[in-house]
Length: 481
Image (cartoon, rainbow, N blue to C red; front, side, top):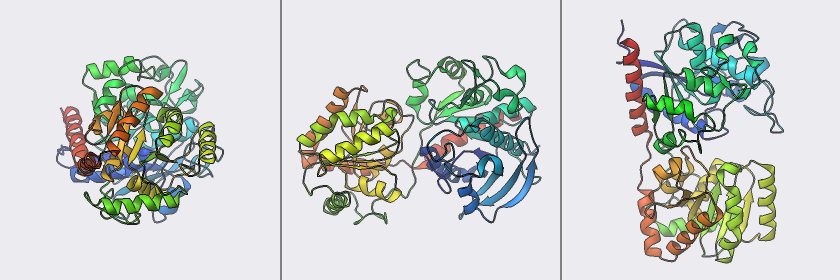
């Protein structure tokens, strides 16, 4: 038998990857982590065949076929590679994936009505590929699935009796992929799976719970979040299952990293690159940022918020603190899309104080970098935050994060050294962090010392990849044994 621990073959299953399509942080992780894992062996990514993926992988070749399963239509398996040679499989199924709109929603922001069929087809194809049933030239020693869209991968492996260890990473437990009971027959799941020890969750079929139940091991994206999701406050109704998995040492927190391109010394999106200590150059970025977003040129602190505009991210807390920030001489730039109510309130805030408040209801990678390079502080008042990437980006660019002490924020912000942590998801608690930021801004010596410490942090993927490598080898060793 081949020793799989020497040169392992890993299939990384993700619904998005920033090389091709991105709606959130998972896409950035899916672009960086498989590349960091390539030192372990043959790591390959599999994606649904959205139009954007097919367009950018025009040279992909057909390597296999996935027959119908239940009511799931047939699919074609394509294989291509990224510009730097990372192998990428694509599940091509035109009726399910080749449509206008986003990966999960239509052009009006409504969930696709057939998301159960779409991601069951994707998961079934990924499981079959891992088991060597699709590409005659390749199979996986281990499959690494991500979030609810890939949650059925471990389930299909289990239901078919295939001997492939599986890992499920939960990037956000709040998104679960819950569907009506009729989904069970549509996706060719066994009747016996609809039970509390299977996919049933409050009378629905839960794709995420399927992965939590059937995967060989579970991970999430920070050590603190791994502990938090075993509690009623953060467990989203799944804390009992997660407590059992944690009790058997089958739940691990591994912190995400960030891309090495987050370096203000060489960033092409900045008006003036800068290094730690280059505060005059950084001020040039701040002045340019104010002009770019229509703010008055002032010398008070500039606060940035870059986030999905949803309740989880504490957008309401930022709105509640806006008057106090502006009255104290600060300015605010918000960038993101999300809840229409928040978008309207942010627009109104901009109309009321256009010289001090800018609301950019969009997302642009270049603008994101300029906001972080010019802001003094980056607001992250999340009610929960599994990992978070923006606070890491912010520190590398010298914008001190103000975050709630939760999840990955607690694990990556050194309170009073590289940013500020506040304890509660309340307006008063968040305002306490804002007050600390203003006090620090008033002492340039302390402000610059904290900036230097923040910019000196390393959030490289290498450490995370090493942790995953150890876990992979453990799972493969157990499988071989």
